[in-house]
Image 1 (cartoon, rainbow, N blue to C red):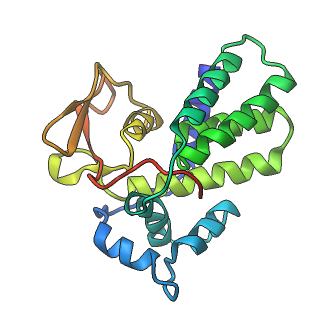
Image 2: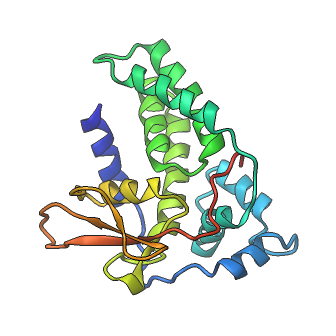
Length: 225
């Protein structure tokens, strides 16, 4: 299973268009834009396009979709998500998950994504299951949605310094991006200040010692898209 997901991660990065220049998100401006019904960045419209796996979304629209979640207050059901994650993990630990197991995993991921809608790991699990079940059209859409998320995140910074952090809306995403970029974390993350996290990387071909991430203080886990 891990080899399969590692391959998915590689394909995701290789198929993603990386921004040549990075820009930190302006959360105040994003909040203003996504609540303006006349704006090209009105959040419900962006969510509808994301749900439809609309690859014509511009980079700014992708950024407003992803970082807009940090400015929205929404009710969450953490307990349901935690239980679904536990049950899903049990099924994925099987050496040879059955078709029924994979269908069940898809059901559990739906519950988890209701709590954490832009989880890269969960989206990758869905891609794997959909392909194994022969739902190729849905798998392609799932990948397109994931690329929308990754594009937004990697446009925010390269993580090389405290002044050029990679912005994410949850700490779980920090490790997802580390793995997605082909690195292995070495030890746990630690905070350099109240908002910036640093993840030390294992030995790698780029000689990169670690990556800096930033989670906005106003960021909250959300439920529902």
